[in-house]
Image 1 (cartoon, rainbow, N blue to C red):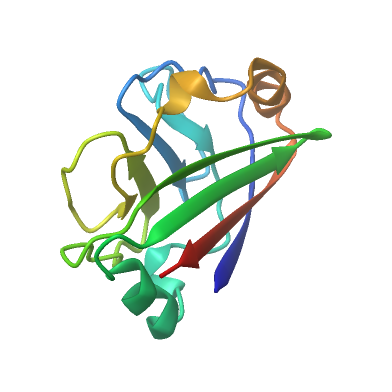
Image 2 (cartoon, rainbow, N blue to C red):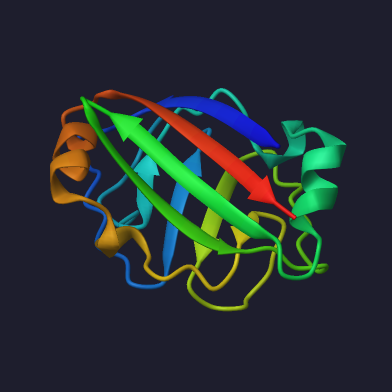
Length: 138
């Protein structure tokens, strides 16, 4: 099962955060948002198919986040959990920890924003169009 989100980079994308990465529907980004990879997303977790959300809430589900922009692509795979809400109407956050809120789309990711390919991050910082694909294998 998968969900596809279209977004874009922003001049303030730095991808330096060490515990989270994020894609937001907001159309702006301040330099403080060092976890944000892309802005102006056309969908949020609140828009996801209920069957997709249910699959993410399966204990041990593997959730893969892939972002493509400017000819570059990178992925990270984390875990689903029964406590995932996946209901935010604003943003989606992948976490290296087990913290959950309405924005959380995966837990126990092996890296956060700082671990994404630097060429991809540079393309996003230049404002490249981005495609995010979330796939769940429950």
